[in-house]
Length: 209
Image 1 (spheres, rainbow, N blue to C red):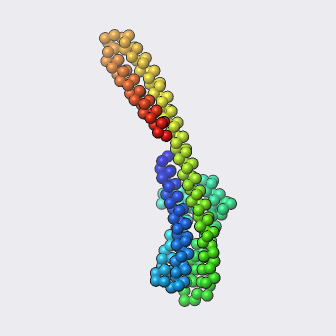
Image 2 (image 1 turned 60 degrees about the horizontal axis):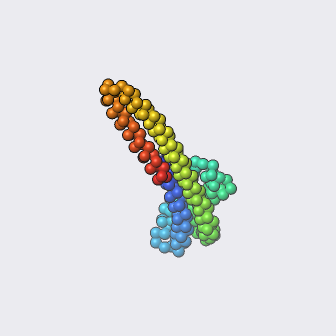
Image 3 (image 1 turned 90 degrees about the horizontal axis):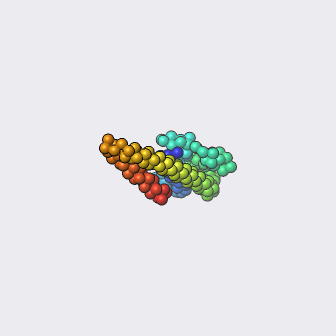
């Protein structure tokens, strides 16, 4: 797990959140198209395409996104919530509505449009569950990153402690060597100073976590 994984999940949260807006926008402009408002049908079709393509990205991935990548998301999309089937049904229903509204014969438009309006609340609830699932994934990833960071800092501190022992032993050896060990003593002292700085940085990082 790395910070780039968290960036990907943030993109997925935004994408899932946008689906909620698109679902309601789709219903609204379908209703306006029924009233023959200017550009309403073309706007509804554009919205439909965005929602369809976004759902495809969430489920199968693409454009740097992984699709369904965890058991939690698998359960939301294909398990108890059946989000994939419900969103697909909503998209298919909207497609029928828009095709009917764009045709010269609109016998089925009223019935399908009424069904689409009725489905708006349920699909919004499902999309809320999807978005919340991605938000949980982000929190879980953030926790893993935090734990990895703590372990890394602790490893750095362990290395720093070992380096201090080496630096101390080197200073003792340099002292015993007398004049011949003066230059080595300077290096050993600098090594000890560096390990102190590393240790201080590690403690500061732990406090900031």
